Length: 130
Image (cartoon, rainbow, N blue to C red):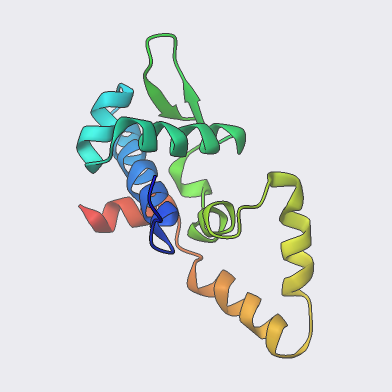
């Protein structure tokens, strides 16, 4: 696979999770192929995002290859998605990022801004996207 531009994994994750958030609102449990088609991603890339989200406890796969959010979309913040898909953190590593946020000086202010700027929830993002 050729080199992907920086941030591509984050964009994929936002698209896929946004599609599942909309499905959650409508009581739908879409198949992998349906999610991939809705967000215009190749199925293997979509599945990669969904499996990563499953490791984080955000999604689950059904027996018929359908996917759903396991949490209310309002409880998943953009900052969480950013950490998972840009910083590539495991859930246990979150405390390390929170420790960074408590740093003083420019680095600490940076992490405060990241959390503040990305405080929007997945539910709010999906609602804005229409």
